[in-house]
Image (cartoon, rainbow, N blue to C red):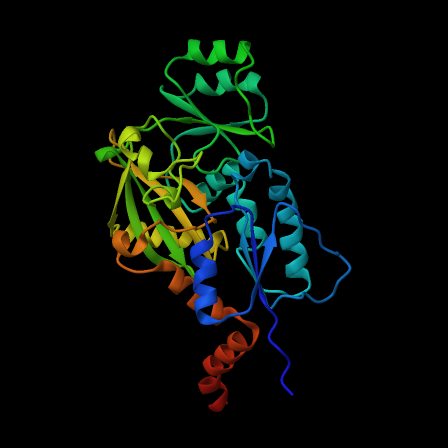
Amino acid sequence: MAQPQKPIGIYYEHPEWFKPLFAELDRRGLPYEKIDAAHHLFDPSETESRYSLVVNRMSSSAYLRGHGQGIFHTAGFATHLERIGTRIINGSVATSIETNKARQLSLFASLGLKYPKSFVVNHASRVPDAARQLQFPIVVKVNIGGSGAGIIRFDTIEGVQAAVEAGQIDLGIDQTAVVQEYVTPRGGNIHRVETLDGKFLYAMKVFTTGESFNLCPAEICQIPEEQSAEFCLTEAPKKGIQVEAFTPPAEVIEAVERIVAAAKIDVGGIEYLIDDRTGDVLFYDVNALSNFVADAVNVVGFDPYARFVDYLESQLPGVAATAVATEVQPETATV
């Protein structure tokens, strides 16, 4: 008698972002279990997971909702799952890149890709030293951010020094920050490229005034049921934010796919802009938490959650094993 299929574990923290994912899993009748990443425990001595597959949807902005402990806990949980042989979507390497802007910059450098000139500091007293080596305006970004949180812009070195002396610069939950040149984006927009299974899925231009750094795509185009404390459509005219779908140049898509391959990101978004001064493509953010743009069918022309669940089904143990066997069959037959 066949053993019942283990459920897919959906490890997540945000209460709203993944409703479309759950709806698609329900529609297909796939067994799954919601795992509360903010209040979680696991047994390091276990040798087998109760899940057929674990989907890591932990958010770097969780600390804004009082769940910062989940960010650090996730690193250990992902490592544990990998040790016992459980497939995890966006595993320990992806998590380590998602939650560390300094690592992201190092990754860009290792791939020969350009990014805004930056320094990494671990104490507020070093922010002015970094700022003096940059062209103003600058931004100070906490190392673990998410949804544009923890970003402060300065137009003068005097402003930086005054903020430091007043104790107004918070380096975030890991006390590390990136001090970076603020680059004016050509056309007044940044670009976000979403990927799935290491390949280009779709891209958006996000138009912003530069006054807000909250560019979470799931909150840009949605029509909310009720007013949220975070960004929602009713605030869009005030914040000057709009999005449109587009296809990046081939060389940008190739660079994005190299980034997600190196970061071992199964599903995720990469953000870049065009420097208005030089025309250079500058990468600046790796986001392994792809909650996709809201109202995607109207914005990008298809439902990315349907494709995401297609991918999850292909990664289930029995399906993945069958796919591998099918791939190697022609070669083994000729031996």
